[in-house]
Image (cartoon, rainbow, N blue to C red; front, top):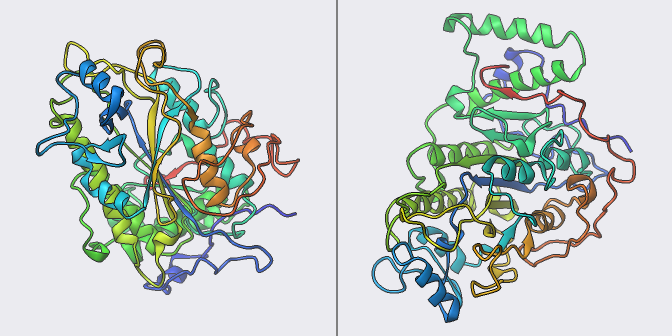
Length: 455
Protein backbone atom coordinates (compact mmCIF):
# COMPACT_ATOMS: atom_id res chain seq x y z
CA UNK A 1 0.00 0.00 0.00
CA UNK A 2 1.27 3.47 -0.88
CA UNK A 3 1.21 5.78 2.11
CA UNK A 4 -0.50 9.16 1.64
CA UNK A 5 1.93 12.04 1.33
CA UNK A 6 -0.63 14.78 2.13
CA UNK A 7 1.92 17.13 0.60
CA UNK A 8 -0.69 19.73 -0.14
CA UNK A 9 -1.99 21.32 -3.29
CA UNK A 10 0.75 22.85 -5.45
CA UNK A 11 -0.62 25.74 -7.47
CA UNK A 12 2.61 26.54 -9.25
CA UNK A 13 2.43 30.30 -8.91
CA UNK A 14 0.47 33.02 -7.18
CA UNK A 15 -1.27 33.95 -10.44
CA UNK A 16 -2.81 30.50 -10.69
CA UNK A 17 -4.18 30.70 -7.17
CA UNK A 18 -5.45 34.21 -7.83
CA UNK A 19 -7.69 32.71 -10.49
CA UNK A 20 -9.25 30.53 -7.82
CA UNK A 21 -10.41 33.45 -5.67
CA UNK A 22 -13.79 32.75 -4.19
CA UNK A 23 -13.69 29.11 -5.24
CA UNK A 24 -14.41 26.20 -2.96
CA UNK A 25 -12.18 23.15 -2.71
CA UNK A 26 -14.48 20.24 -1.87
CA UNK A 27 -12.91 17.70 0.44
CA UNK A 28 -13.30 15.00 -2.21
CA UNK A 29 -11.16 16.94 -4.68
CA UNK A 30 -8.06 14.85 -4.09
CA UNK A 31 -9.76 11.67 -2.88
CA UNK A 32 -8.72 8.17 -3.83
CA UNK A 33 -11.88 6.49 -5.23
CA UNK A 34 -10.77 3.18 -3.72
CA UNK A 35 -10.60 4.57 -0.17
CA UNK A 36 -13.56 5.44 2.07
CA UNK A 37 -12.38 8.94 2.98
CA UNK A 38 -12.85 10.15 6.55
CA UNK A 39 -13.97 13.78 6.82
CA UNK A 40 -14.08 14.22 10.60
CA UNK A 41 -12.76 17.47 12.05
CA UNK A 42 -11.15 17.07 15.48
CA UNK A 43 -10.60 20.18 17.61
CA UNK A 44 -8.33 19.67 20.63
CA UNK A 45 -8.51 22.39 23.30
CA UNK A 46 -5.92 22.29 26.07
CA UNK A 47 -6.57 24.16 29.34
CA UNK A 48 -3.03 24.93 30.47
CA UNK A 49 -2.22 25.32 34.13
CA UNK A 50 -4.23 22.51 35.69
CA UNK A 51 -7.96 23.26 35.60
CA UNK A 52 -9.90 22.71 38.85
CA UNK A 53 -12.24 20.00 37.66
CA UNK A 54 -13.98 19.71 41.01
CA UNK A 55 -15.30 23.24 40.54
CA UNK A 56 -16.21 22.61 36.92
CA UNK A 57 -18.04 19.30 37.38
CA UNK A 58 -19.33 19.63 40.92
CA UNK A 59 -20.60 16.96 43.34
CA UNK A 60 -24.16 18.02 44.20
CA UNK A 61 -25.51 15.16 46.33
CA UNK A 62 -24.68 12.55 48.96
CA UNK A 63 -21.62 12.18 51.14
CA UNK A 64 -19.32 13.56 48.45
CA UNK A 65 -21.23 16.85 48.49
CA UNK A 66 -20.69 17.23 52.21
CA UNK A 67 -17.01 16.32 51.89
CA UNK A 68 -16.58 18.78 49.04
CA UNK A 69 -18.19 21.67 50.95
CA UNK A 70 -16.20 20.91 54.11
CA UNK A 71 -12.96 20.87 52.13
CA UNK A 72 -13.77 24.13 50.33
CA UNK A 73 -15.53 26.43 52.80
CA UNK A 74 -14.94 29.50 50.64
CA UNK A 75 -14.59 28.42 47.02
CA UNK A 76 -17.21 25.63 46.79
CA UNK A 77 -19.81 26.13 44.05
CA UNK A 78 -23.18 26.56 45.83
CA UNK A 79 -26.39 24.65 45.22
CA UNK A 80 -28.70 27.62 45.71
CA UNK A 81 -28.91 31.19 44.52
CA UNK A 82 -27.90 32.91 41.29
CA UNK A 83 -24.53 31.15 41.12
CA UNK A 84 -25.69 27.61 41.88
CA UNK A 85 -24.43 24.61 39.94
CA UNK A 86 -26.39 23.55 36.86
CA UNK A 87 -27.58 19.94 37.20
CA UNK A 88 -26.10 17.32 34.89
CA UNK A 89 -27.65 14.35 36.66
CA UNK A 90 -28.55 13.59 40.25
CA UNK A 91 -24.91 13.30 41.29
CA UNK A 92 -23.10 16.11 39.45
CA UNK A 93 -23.64 19.67 38.31
CA UNK A 94 -21.82 22.07 36.03
CA UNK A 95 -20.36 25.41 37.10
CA UNK A 96 -22.96 28.14 36.60
CA UNK A 97 -20.59 30.14 34.37
CA UNK A 98 -20.67 27.25 31.88
CA UNK A 99 -24.31 27.93 30.98
CA UNK A 100 -23.73 27.83 27.18
CA UNK A 101 -22.05 24.44 27.52
CA UNK A 102 -24.91 23.26 29.73
CA UNK A 103 -27.38 24.12 26.98
CA UNK A 104 -25.45 21.89 24.57
CA UNK A 105 -25.39 19.18 27.27
CA UNK A 106 -29.16 19.33 27.51
CA UNK A 107 -29.30 18.82 23.75
CA UNK A 108 -27.25 15.64 24.06
CA UNK A 109 -24.16 17.14 22.42
CA UNK A 110 -21.80 16.99 25.43
CA UNK A 111 -20.19 13.98 27.07
CA UNK A 112 -18.49 14.52 30.43
CA UNK A 113 -15.89 11.94 31.43
CA UNK A 114 -15.01 12.05 35.11
CA UNK A 115 -11.72 11.23 36.82
CA UNK A 116 -9.47 11.07 33.75
CA UNK A 117 -5.75 11.69 33.50
CA UNK A 118 -2.38 10.01 33.81
CA UNK A 119 -2.15 6.71 35.64
CA UNK A 120 0.82 7.93 37.64
CA UNK A 121 0.70 11.41 39.11
CA UNK A 122 3.10 14.11 38.09
CA UNK A 123 2.38 17.49 39.58
CA UNK A 124 4.79 19.17 37.20
CA UNK A 125 2.94 21.23 34.58
CA UNK A 126 5.69 20.72 32.01
CA UNK A 127 6.05 16.97 32.51
CA UNK A 128 2.32 16.27 32.55
CA UNK A 129 1.67 18.29 29.40
CA UNK A 130 4.54 16.54 27.61
CA UNK A 131 3.28 13.09 28.66
CA UNK A 132 -0.24 13.85 27.44
CA UNK A 133 0.55 15.68 24.21
CA UNK A 134 3.20 13.22 23.12
CA UNK A 135 0.84 10.41 24.10
CA UNK A 136 3.54 8.57 26.06
CA UNK A 137 2.98 8.80 29.83
CA UNK A 138 6.26 8.67 31.72
CA UNK A 139 8.27 9.49 28.57
CA UNK A 140 8.67 13.12 27.54
CA UNK A 141 11.39 12.61 24.93
CA UNK A 142 9.20 10.94 22.30
CA UNK A 143 10.06 12.54 18.97
CA UNK A 144 6.49 13.17 17.81
CA UNK A 145 3.05 14.03 19.14
CA UNK A 146 0.06 11.70 19.19
CA UNK A 147 -1.82 13.69 16.56
CA UNK A 148 1.19 13.61 14.23
CA UNK A 149 1.27 9.83 14.58
CA UNK A 150 -2.45 9.73 13.85
CA UNK A 151 -1.80 11.47 10.53
CA UNK A 152 1.02 9.05 9.65
CA UNK A 153 -1.06 5.97 10.46
CA UNK A 154 -4.44 7.09 9.09
CA UNK A 155 -5.33 5.01 6.05
CA UNK A 156 -8.53 6.87 5.18
CA UNK A 157 -7.24 10.30 4.14
CA UNK A 158 -6.81 11.56 0.59
CA UNK A 159 -3.20 11.55 -0.63
CA UNK A 160 -3.14 15.34 -0.90
CA UNK A 161 -4.84 17.88 1.38
CA UNK A 162 -4.29 21.61 1.23
CA UNK A 163 -4.59 22.21 4.97
CA UNK A 164 -4.81 18.98 7.02
CA UNK A 165 -3.96 20.57 10.39
CA UNK A 166 -3.93 23.99 12.00
CA UNK A 167 -2.27 24.90 15.27
CA UNK A 168 -3.84 28.19 16.35
CA UNK A 169 -1.19 30.53 17.70
CA UNK A 170 2.48 31.17 17.05
CA UNK A 171 3.80 27.73 18.04
CA UNK A 172 2.97 24.23 16.91
CA UNK A 173 1.18 22.23 19.59
CA UNK A 174 3.30 19.40 20.97
CA UNK A 175 0.53 16.96 20.06
CA UNK A 176 1.28 17.81 16.41
CA UNK A 177 5.05 17.72 16.86
CA UNK A 178 6.57 16.12 13.79
CA UNK A 179 3.67 16.85 11.46
CA UNK A 180 5.24 18.67 8.52
CA UNK A 181 1.90 19.87 7.16
CA UNK A 182 0.74 21.84 10.20
CA UNK A 183 -0.02 25.49 9.57
CA UNK A 184 0.44 27.92 12.48
CA UNK A 185 -2.02 30.77 12.35
CA UNK A 186 -3.18 33.40 14.84
CA UNK A 187 -5.55 35.09 12.40
CA UNK A 188 -6.15 34.90 8.65
CA UNK A 189 -5.21 38.57 8.30
CA UNK A 190 -1.74 38.00 9.73
CA UNK A 191 -1.08 34.86 7.68
CA UNK A 192 1.18 36.44 5.09
CA UNK A 193 4.75 37.28 4.23
CA UNK A 194 6.14 39.82 6.65
CA UNK A 195 9.60 40.49 5.23
CA UNK A 196 10.48 44.05 4.26
CA UNK A 197 8.15 46.60 2.61
CA UNK A 198 4.69 45.50 1.46
CA UNK A 199 5.48 46.18 -2.20
CA UNK A 200 8.15 43.46 -2.13
CA UNK A 201 5.62 40.74 -1.32
CA UNK A 202 4.68 39.52 -4.82
CA UNK A 203 8.28 39.35 -5.98
CA UNK A 204 9.21 37.50 -2.80
CA UNK A 205 6.50 34.93 -3.37
CA UNK A 206 7.60 34.28 -6.94
CA UNK A 207 11.22 33.93 -5.82
CA UNK A 208 10.28 31.58 -2.98
CA UNK A 209 8.16 29.44 -5.29
CA UNK A 210 11.06 29.06 -7.71
CA UNK A 211 13.35 28.13 -4.81
CA UNK A 212 10.96 25.62 -3.23
CA UNK A 213 10.13 24.06 -6.63
CA UNK A 214 13.80 23.29 -7.15
CA UNK A 215 13.79 20.04 -5.17
CA UNK A 216 11.37 17.49 -3.67
CA UNK A 217 12.65 17.26 -0.08
CA UNK A 218 10.24 17.64 2.86
CA UNK A 219 11.59 21.18 3.36
CA UNK A 220 10.75 22.19 -0.22
CA UNK A 221 7.35 20.50 -0.10
CA UNK A 222 6.45 22.19 3.19
CA UNK A 223 7.56 25.55 1.83
CA UNK A 224 5.30 25.21 -1.19
CA UNK A 225 2.41 24.13 1.00
CA UNK A 226 2.85 27.15 3.24
CA UNK A 227 2.82 29.48 0.22
CA UNK A 228 -0.25 27.78 -1.25
CA UNK A 229 -2.14 27.96 2.03
CA UNK A 230 -1.12 31.59 2.48
CA UNK A 231 -2.45 32.58 -0.94
CA UNK A 232 -5.74 30.74 -0.55
CA UNK A 233 -6.38 32.06 2.97
CA UNK A 234 -5.55 35.62 1.93
CA UNK A 235 -7.98 35.47 -1.00
CA UNK A 236 -10.80 33.76 0.84
CA UNK A 237 -10.62 34.54 4.55
CA UNK A 238 -8.59 37.68 5.21
CA UNK A 239 -11.54 40.09 5.46
CA UNK A 240 -14.08 40.56 8.24
CA UNK A 241 -15.72 37.32 9.33
CA UNK A 242 -19.41 36.99 10.17
CA UNK A 243 -20.27 33.85 12.18
CA UNK A 244 -23.28 31.81 11.11
CA UNK A 245 -26.48 31.28 13.06
CA UNK A 246 -25.93 34.32 15.26
CA UNK A 247 -22.99 32.69 17.05
CA UNK A 248 -21.22 35.06 19.44
CA UNK A 249 -17.61 34.29 20.30
CA UNK A 250 -16.02 35.62 23.50
CA UNK A 251 -13.71 38.59 23.09
CA UNK A 252 -9.98 37.92 23.28
CA UNK A 253 -7.54 35.46 21.84
CA UNK A 254 -9.54 32.33 22.69
CA UNK A 255 -12.63 33.48 20.83
CA UNK A 256 -10.49 34.80 17.97
CA UNK A 257 -8.72 31.45 17.68
CA UNK A 258 -11.96 29.51 17.54
CA UNK A 259 -13.17 31.79 14.76
CA UNK A 260 -10.00 30.90 12.83
CA UNK A 261 -10.95 27.23 13.16
CA UNK A 262 -14.49 27.96 11.93
CA UNK A 263 -13.19 29.91 8.94
CA UNK A 264 -10.69 27.25 7.94
CA UNK A 265 -13.34 24.54 8.28
CA UNK A 266 -15.75 26.44 6.04
CA UNK A 267 -13.10 26.95 3.36
CA UNK A 268 -13.24 23.17 2.76
CA UNK A 269 -9.49 22.88 2.45
CA UNK A 270 -9.52 19.44 4.02
CA UNK A 271 -8.99 20.48 7.64
CA UNK A 272 -8.93 17.39 9.84
CA UNK A 273 -7.30 18.56 13.08
CA UNK A 274 -7.09 21.91 14.86
CA UNK A 275 -5.44 22.63 18.19
CA UNK A 276 -5.58 25.61 20.50
CA UNK A 277 -4.83 26.50 24.11
CA UNK A 278 -6.15 28.73 26.82
CA UNK A 279 -3.95 29.30 29.85
CA UNK A 280 -4.42 30.79 33.29
CA UNK A 281 -5.75 27.75 35.15
CA UNK A 282 -3.00 27.56 37.80
CA UNK A 283 -5.30 28.93 40.51
CA UNK A 284 -3.19 28.81 43.66
CA UNK A 285 -4.46 32.18 44.86
CA UNK A 286 -7.89 33.88 44.90
CA UNK A 287 -9.65 31.35 42.71
CA UNK A 288 -13.01 32.92 43.50
CA UNK A 289 -15.51 32.45 46.32
CA UNK A 290 -18.98 30.96 46.05
CA UNK A 291 -18.85 30.20 42.34
CA UNK A 292 -17.82 33.67 41.17
CA UNK A 293 -14.52 35.46 40.54
CA UNK A 294 -11.47 34.54 38.50
CA UNK A 295 -12.20 30.86 37.83
CA UNK A 296 -15.77 31.67 36.85
CA UNK A 297 -14.48 34.15 34.28
CA UNK A 298 -12.29 31.52 32.65
CA UNK A 299 -15.13 29.02 32.73
CA UNK A 300 -17.44 31.48 31.01
CA UNK A 301 -14.90 32.19 28.26
CA UNK A 302 -14.32 28.52 27.48
CA UNK A 303 -17.98 27.61 27.61
CA UNK A 304 -19.08 30.52 25.44
CA UNK A 305 -16.30 29.78 22.95
CA UNK A 306 -17.11 26.09 22.56
CA UNK A 307 -20.82 26.82 22.20
CA UNK A 308 -20.12 29.56 19.64
CA UNK A 309 -17.96 27.27 17.49
CA UNK A 310 -20.61 24.56 17.58
CA UNK A 311 -23.37 27.04 16.72
CA UNK A 312 -21.29 28.63 13.95
CA UNK A 313 -20.70 25.27 12.25
CA UNK A 314 -24.17 23.85 12.88
CA UNK A 315 -25.78 23.67 9.46
CA UNK A 316 -23.29 26.08 7.87
CA UNK A 317 -22.48 25.91 4.17
CA UNK A 318 -23.50 23.09 1.89
CA UNK A 319 -23.40 20.59 4.72
CA UNK A 320 -23.83 20.44 8.45
CA UNK A 321 -20.25 20.59 9.70
CA UNK A 322 -21.27 19.53 13.21
CA UNK A 323 -22.12 16.12 11.75
CA UNK A 324 -18.37 15.61 11.48
CA UNK A 325 -17.13 17.84 14.30
CA UNK A 326 -15.67 16.56 17.57
CA UNK A 327 -14.16 18.86 20.19
CA UNK A 328 -12.24 17.45 23.13
CA UNK A 329 -11.18 19.56 26.13
CA UNK A 330 -8.58 18.52 28.67
CA UNK A 331 -6.01 19.82 31.12
CA UNK A 332 -2.75 18.37 32.40
CA UNK A 333 -4.13 17.55 35.87
CA UNK A 334 -6.77 18.59 38.38
CA UNK A 335 -6.45 20.36 41.73
CA UNK A 336 -6.38 19.25 45.36
CA UNK A 337 -9.69 18.64 47.09
CA UNK A 338 -8.76 21.00 49.94
CA UNK A 339 -8.67 24.70 49.25
CA UNK A 340 -5.45 26.31 50.50
CA UNK A 341 -4.89 29.25 52.84
CA UNK A 342 -4.93 31.67 49.88
CA UNK A 343 -8.42 30.60 48.82
CA UNK A 344 -7.03 28.74 45.87
CA UNK A 345 -6.17 25.13 45.07
CA UNK A 346 -2.87 23.35 44.58
CA UNK A 347 -1.81 20.76 41.99
CA UNK A 348 -3.84 17.58 42.06
CA UNK A 349 -4.53 14.51 39.95
CA UNK A 350 -7.81 13.34 38.37
CA UNK A 351 -9.91 15.67 36.22
CA UNK A 352 -12.84 15.61 33.80
CA UNK A 353 -12.49 15.62 30.02
CA UNK A 354 -15.26 17.22 27.97
CA UNK A 355 -16.31 16.03 24.52
CA UNK A 356 -18.60 18.22 22.40
CA UNK A 357 -19.81 16.70 19.14
CA UNK A 358 -22.70 16.31 16.78
CA UNK A 359 -22.07 12.61 17.39
CA UNK A 360 -21.70 12.76 21.17
CA UNK A 361 -23.47 10.27 23.37
CA UNK A 362 -24.44 12.85 25.94
CA UNK A 363 -24.25 12.36 29.67
CA UNK A 364 -21.77 11.77 32.48
CA UNK A 365 -19.36 8.90 31.82
CA UNK A 366 -16.51 7.15 33.58
CA UNK A 367 -16.13 5.64 37.02
CA UNK A 368 -16.33 8.09 39.91
CA UNK A 369 -13.80 7.15 42.64
CA UNK A 370 -15.36 9.23 45.43
CA UNK A 371 -14.00 11.87 47.78
CA UNK A 372 -14.22 9.97 51.06
CA UNK A 373 -11.53 8.48 53.30
CA UNK A 374 -9.46 5.89 51.46
CA UNK A 375 -10.83 7.01 48.08
CA UNK A 376 -8.54 9.96 47.37
CA UNK A 377 -5.23 9.60 45.57
CA UNK A 378 -2.42 10.27 48.08
CA UNK A 379 -5.20 11.11 50.56
CA UNK A 380 -5.45 14.47 48.81
CA UNK A 381 -6.64 14.33 45.18
CA UNK A 382 -9.39 12.92 43.05
CA UNK A 383 -8.11 9.57 41.81
CA UNK A 384 -7.77 8.72 38.12
CA UNK A 385 -10.05 5.90 37.00
CA UNK A 386 -9.96 6.53 33.23
CA UNK A 387 -6.72 6.82 31.31
CA UNK A 388 -6.92 9.92 29.08
CA UNK A 389 -5.83 7.72 26.16
CA UNK A 390 -9.05 5.74 26.47
CA UNK A 391 -11.10 8.84 25.71
CA UNK A 392 -8.89 9.86 22.79
CA UNK A 393 -8.78 6.30 21.46
CA UNK A 394 -12.56 6.14 21.24
CA UNK A 395 -12.55 9.35 19.21
CA UNK A 396 -9.78 8.00 16.99
CA UNK A 397 -11.58 4.72 16.32
CA UNK A 398 -15.23 5.73 16.20
CA UNK A 399 -14.89 9.18 14.62
CA UNK A 400 -11.51 9.30 12.83
CA UNK A 401 -11.58 5.67 11.71
CA UNK A 402 -8.00 5.03 12.90
CA UNK A 403 -7.47 1.89 14.95
CA UNK A 404 -3.64 1.90 15.09
CA UNK A 405 -3.53 2.60 18.82
CA UNK A 406 -0.21 0.85 19.40
CA UNK A 407 1.48 3.30 17.06
CA UNK A 408 -0.36 6.42 18.22
CA UNK A 409 -0.11 5.56 21.93
CA UNK A 410 2.89 3.21 22.30
CA UNK A 411 2.46 0.73 25.12
CA UNK A 412 -1.27 1.35 25.57
CA UNK A 413 -3.15 -1.94 25.28
CA UNK A 414 -6.28 -1.66 27.44
CA UNK A 415 -8.77 0.23 25.29
CA UNK A 416 -12.46 -0.33 25.83
CA UNK A 417 -15.06 2.14 24.54
CA UNK A 418 -16.75 4.29 27.16
CA UNK A 419 -19.65 5.16 24.87
CA UNK A 420 -18.96 8.89 24.57
CA UNK A 421 -19.33 9.19 20.77
CA UNK A 422 -21.17 7.17 18.19
CA UNK A 423 -19.41 5.42 15.35
CA UNK A 424 -18.09 2.10 14.10
CA UNK A 425 -15.95 0.00 16.43
CA UNK A 426 -12.82 -1.36 14.75
CA UNK A 427 -10.65 -3.90 16.60
CA UNK A 428 -7.65 -1.95 17.93
CA UNK A 429 -4.23 -2.65 16.49
CA UNK A 430 -1.73 -2.59 19.36
CA UNK A 431 1.36 -3.28 17.26
CA UNK A 432 3.93 -0.52 17.70
CA UNK A 433 4.49 -0.04 13.98
CA UNK A 434 1.05 -0.76 12.56
CA UNK A 435 2.22 -4.22 11.44
CA UNK A 436 5.13 -2.63 9.63
CA UNK A 437 3.07 -0.11 7.65
CA UNK A 438 4.61 3.00 9.18
CA UNK A 439 8.01 4.48 9.83
CA UNK A 440 9.39 3.94 13.33
CA UNK A 441 9.21 7.66 14.02
CA UNK A 442 10.21 11.00 12.57
CA UNK A 443 13.85 11.67 11.88
CA UNK A 444 15.56 13.64 14.60
CA UNK A 445 14.94 17.33 14.13
CA UNK A 446 12.69 16.74 11.11
CA UNK A 447 9.63 18.46 12.52
CA UNK A 448 8.76 20.77 9.66
CA UNK A 449 6.86 23.47 11.56
CA UNK A 450 5.76 26.36 9.36
CA UNK A 451 4.20 29.60 10.54
CA UNK A 452 2.97 32.77 8.93
CA UNK A 453 6.30 34.42 9.59
CA UNK A 454 8.34 31.58 8.07
CA UNK A 455 6.85 30.43 4.74
